[in-house]
Amino acid sequence: MNYYPNIEKIKFEGTESKNPFAFRHYNPEEVVLGKTMKEHLRFAVCYWHTMTQDGSDPFGNAVNKRPWFGKTAMDTARNRVEAFFELLEKLGAEYFCFHDVDIAPEGNSLEEFFQNIDEITDLIKQKMDETGIKLLWNTANMFSNPRFVSGAASTNQAEVFAIAAAQVKKGLDVSKKLGGANYVFWGGREGYETLLNTDMKFEQDNIARLFKMAVNYSEKIGHKPQFLIEPKPMEPSKHQYDFDAATTLQFIQKYGLENDFKLNLEANHATLAGHTFEHELTVARINGALGSIDANQGDVLLGWDTDEFPTNIYDVTLTMREILENGGIAPGGINFDAKVRRSAFDVEDLFLAHIAGMDTFARGLKNAAKLKQDGFLEELIAERYASFQTGIGASILADQEDLESLSTFALEHEDAEVKSSHIEYVKNVLNDYMK
Ligand code: XUL
Ligand code: CO
Image 1 (tube, rainbow, N blue to C red):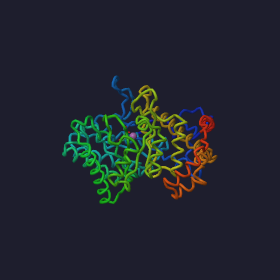
Image 2: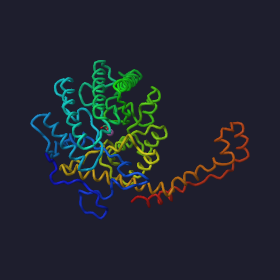
Image 3: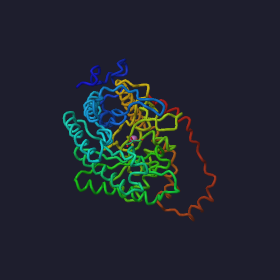
Image 4: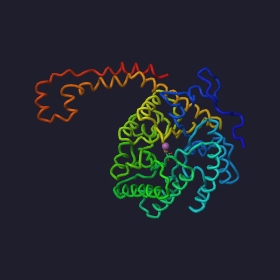
């Protein structure tokens, strides 16, 4: 079945092209800093926003026109696999991500849910073998079902903890079956509403307990994906345990999970936490924990997770600067955790939106590469800390000073000149790179 008969494989046509169904910046085979764009960017399409989102919001009904609805939920699920892989092939996206509930209906029991997953992942595997498209990560949705109202791993109800564990086990079995590179935990309901009824330490110990079970099981079945935790500060819980990169790293380190866990960072989650995305990426990178990214953007005028496709060249350039600094993002990738706006309801918009995101990241990559090659910021930073390269600074870095020796030095040098940052000049030069 051909779900998008009017759309051919999307090709790179260059900046002069007026064809909306062409890349104007993303040229997969073009080499940038010794690697192809495709190798740098490792684009993934997500199943949830792309295949299951209907365009409804709290005030309005579904608007999205999708050709894959069938007579039963399983018919729809089967059609989606076809439609999804056709979209990925035409876009030239090499990876994909999904939650268990995105691909298969839950049915009337856990047993039926798992059978549905088995049937649909057979189809997915077939498509992966035919096309060479790979699984970047999968995850278990442990937040939508009403049973998770008070948490999944952090629940007060032991039976619910067991169901979460069963979903994670199934998720790892699926990861093995499909050769998943990473496995994600986003703790949608792992947080709390009020301390009046919450034992925070108990809940966090239990989250770590489930994570350790996941590591043990993956070792047992001989398939160890890179485990990733995705921080987010709010929505849906008032207090989310994985607030941001720093909080999540503290959790990983406290429970001794650092050998198996890294972070999956999302741009709009960073801004909700009151951080720039590059702040979050840097916190992860300098701690050796930058695993993968969920690419999207929020709206400065709206205070929630709008999950827009990334089109802001400035922000994406700074994102790519961090990814280059990290030496790349593999085995992670750039997953578009983004949805078309409600007014963009045609199926063609799914292509246009991904083309926009892919072109923006290609521009960001080229801008960041040029910035790195020119060394403008590197020189600026080296110069800014230059006082630590000689004299007393070098002696501090060599751990040859203490409070007494520095006190003696300070009494003789208190009139040292403090330098201006000239930061407006820096930003003016940076603008020259935003192409
Ligand atoms: C929620 C979110 C999730 C995770 C996977 O804001 O980003 O879709 O990426 O559960
Ligand atoms: Co996400």
